[in-house]
Length: 206
Length: 221
Image (tube, rainbow over all chains, first blue to last red; front, side, top):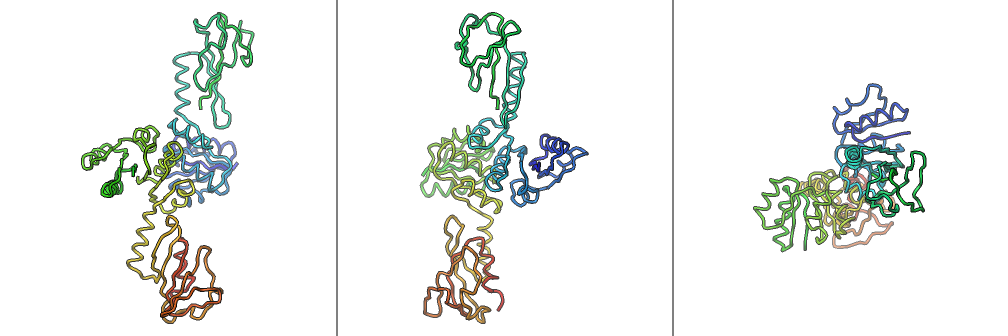
């Protein structure tokens, strides 16, 4: 794939290097020339030095012929602006922006922009590591991250039906693991919880 | 009118003063504490210390109540995002953004900013107007600066003297509105000709102004 990476900091440079190693045609844009030093030695794509929101720089870096663009500069607003330009003006098929501020990320993803929010991801990981100390597996669907979290049944829910469990927003109870062998998918059913049950939640983290 | 200004630098500060003189109610948002203190001390208005591209800051500036948001920071991307957030989340009716890099003017418009102010171009055309080596004098800007009505004085020994308009290749957004020849005002058609010393009233896209010199052969005498 022909991919344009905007921003060559820690994420941008690693992203570009990884994609390049995977065999994609990568072009990197950065307003700081020194940042290109972050790229791995075997990086074999193109680099363009210039202001990322400048159309001429983007054209020089190949935005008109790229199939995907990742806006990962340090500045949320630059990422949002570049993504919008990529989508509306240059009609790039796949556009992704990293946005640190969860609220801004929310707004722009409601307007159709695919966003990745490291803040949300970090908070979620650290929270579950600190509070639950249980396993937490995440995977990506498109630009979203879904986490599965397992938790020993809290005392107050024993002998209550599943519907009594208080859930956070973006969270559903996916299944109950019972007797270390049975997995009851919650779905339409409303089973009564027992001592020893393990709750499996599915949460939309980002 | 309630106006919220994002960016309290030189432009923002003097803009606020002007709005106050015209009896409007400006509010300023700036990300720099010193700037905020300065404005708060000098002018009797609400000053919000914060990042105008953050939803919380816009909220605390009560932007839902404002009639217009004017973004005049030094960064085009910040001006764009603040306008978009104001519009999308708070339904602010009028969004105005200053653009520092003229190349971004079209982009800002396409991405939904109602009024884009291209200060570099404005200054450049002011300079050109004052120095006026070109024979094109800009009179009025229309359509948020995208289109301009200009007056063109054709020289003596004009290169295209007696040439029919239909034989001159015109840019897309262009029309000769009228030709003043001595005492006569002519509304031109394709058969009309241009003559030396004619004064033309022309409507054209701002972007094609620079081409007019060569298209109308104004430089060659």
